[in-house]
Image (cartoon, rainbow, N blue to C red; front, side, top):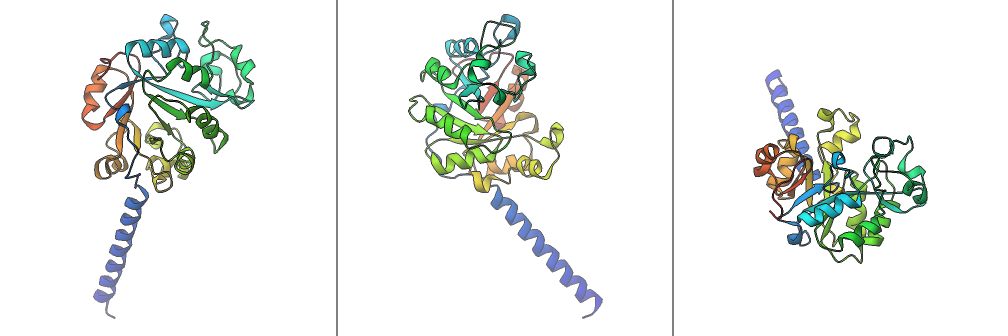
Length: 282
């Protein structure tokens, strides 16, 4: 084989490899195509950790913040993780430092110990997930984030134990695709979403695992119904493919002003907000 023939053969091989890699990329991104009905979740803005304002004595993920969101007619986004004794509680951070001023992890303290802590120096306490659901009682739709730093099936199991008989509209989401896989296997009737961002640009984690997660290449296993993405990186190619080509529901987090809302309104259908109040019921 002469040089030109060899070069042509190498180019053909390279082209074939690129086509195969592209096909694999599109395959790994596939969400769930036949989703459960989500109509009850649509047409709302979702208050991020409730309608909170610490300057007014309303801390995030508090019953007070949730009551205010309900009164204003907003949907609610909240976070669920486990106490040391396995009780689902509503709290965002893995540690208690920022919100409660205690240098411990949430999963290191029992419910009784957590209940002794103040949220942001107020009289509000960390609510249990059961208390939260009893408060809302189906009046507004919910986006329930399953908090998992590492795979722990007890967390989705415990959340589902309370949600399985809940009559109000809700969906679940998580950064950890394992939570979605759990719901895919055990509760396929629940609308589920992959939380995501550009981890590299966020400078959160540059590991290969987070690169795969940031590009949503775990969708092949998790099969999300919606993609909840950091709105600042809405032009990410993987997000565009999932929501544009494959028609996964696009959800934006976290919108912090009317200007930001106007800027990204055309790219998303649901909006998680904080720090201002968009019009309720839209």
